[in-house]
Length: 291
Image (cartoon, rainbow, N blue to C red; front, side, top):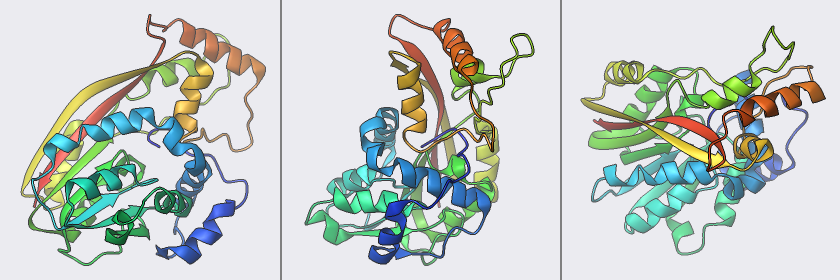
């Protein structure tokens, strides 16, 4: 998922051990943040494709920026592999790698990848900040709504540049401030009403920050487009399912939502209702990077 910080884990995910036997994996995530992110996405893996409507629509916005041909293609933060499979159709002669920090997501990716496409796709557990690939090995790197989870933006873009061949390209969707502004409004603590809710929304980087980080990471040409995308849901439960249900969980660390917290958030969100439903906004950044 895309935007809310993950909660602390409450035990191992049952799929993880199986996945580490079946897939080529790096060592376990090395930081507490990485472990929390991997755990949150692993818990969401079985229902991710059902709930990730917004992610799928935004992934389609990458397609016009793709090159006409590529032989080695990497999908960073591939999740259950939907975009990776689209790329396998678009580049029928290419070898593809789908990489994700969540082992359980890769179990789902293998499950939904039929032959003969499965023969051309390698699934890797790995961290975008330490890609387990050789330098200059990829013609094209694609990533949809993943790099906002990486604490070090410059290092992430450096790693993507390292594995991209000279003359190659990266096309990346990520998020800017203003994303999930309705969630922030609905769950923000307020001294006036005494609510205790924590929004848990990630701190996103500005468009200009991405431009500067990309040039500092060694990319020769950088274009970053920004646009707002809004999606609508019938009620608060569907709003939260669309976010938490695909891997993001608010970090309470011992605190618990009360009925009053939920009622307050519901009332606040209802004040934002549009004819189409309750809105959820994303400030989408599309990075087009040339090596």
